[in-house]
Length: 633
Image (cartoon, rainbow, N blue to C red):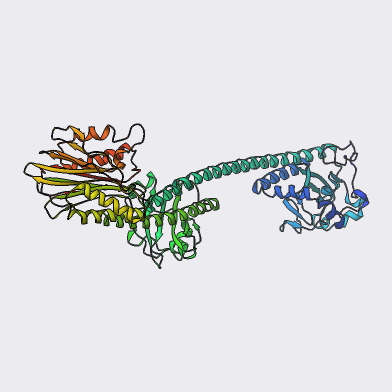
């Protein structure tokens, strides 16, 4: 047999086999120093590392190839070795006793597989007695080796090991023997390469899927950021955070809660459950400061656990008194909500992932959501506090209740705009003068801040003081104008001021309008008309010159006063006051004024798509009331 070519290949021998006793370059086969140098190429070692990822499939493939080689070549011993830079590993060994076979790891100088790999071509030895140097190899005597034939195992163009057959008697290896062994090696490595290709394809698909999901999560996170930052209250912010947490991670349960004390007790502020847990949607309980969730708050660090890890954790307390009503948990991921100064605000928890367990990527995306949520929660909490202050101040600028005016039915409403974090300038007041007249004022100071509140208070108190001594609405309006100008503010005010003198079955009204929408008078039959004369704004010019109007209201007539938040309400199309308000008042003219006030408020809200863009103050006065008192909303 002629010598195979000096490149990886099998079955390239001539008809008469020739024994190879020396390695390339004249080194004796088995020289450890030479072998180590030839085997340590980085490219080959990288391919060998990939072979190691195949695991059990490679062992099954090699075992099958070894059995076939033993049968087809009629030899007692077959081994497959994967040769590393400094040692060789027996992937498969079957046959006669081998002193290191059980260890599976041997030095490079043991056996001839490293020689095959270093040469990158087959090695054929018909009778070791003709090669004294090779006969001294440590494995020859224990295995009673007399003949050897080995072919390279080639993966991705690199020789990573050798398929070797050993006989205890001299053999005349034929070209057919070499071709058979080479085809077995090629088939085995093709099968492994196919598996590697499949694994690589699966890895790339998994990577692409992970990238796609990550991209979707980041897009969803960006959208969540917009929605969370659009929240106008703490409750709305927490509800949005909780829904987005469940959507982002893909879980059946999510909860957002705020820390309420030093012991890490939580106020559960929002829950979100999928249809799987619909039966628990009404569950509501406040953690008392015990349990594993406190670890998240105490250390401001995320926690991620499988269910068995969760239940084995020393801080796990179960559900305590809520064991029979708490929705079950299947795996758990929790991240802290951290304030800008580093203190804990609360946490976001998710449980029961749609598919698989919670991952490090889930933890990362939920942490990002928590960072966004924390900033929004701080902002929303500050707005809530500011809103509560504004409401308290606003209440102080309105009468606590409406007076009881004989023969007159009253109703009033104050509806703040959705952005009610500032005190509004809309106000009204009703009080009785010393001469028995009833005085009514409804106005709107421009702006929404502390200065607007100051001017509002000035208007109310000045009107009350002036009305006690002057029955003329025009004189009171002029005094209010001088008071605002003397205050030195840049704020102006619109108002309607009137006096009402009830008589049996009627009421006399004296009215002035200063830069304000004209009131509407609705008679008992539903006819609607404007009353009053337009006049100058309060606080702009020294000369006000209001034009008073006097008229008489009969039984069932209703006088409606309102601020421009009602008349200018709109979403699309004309303003609410142009056609909608008169038609609505005429249609509902016979309804009790309390109901009428509610009907108008709901209609204005619906007309703007469910969000009030400006404060609205309304006041309804009807001659001949149908109950014993007024209504204040």
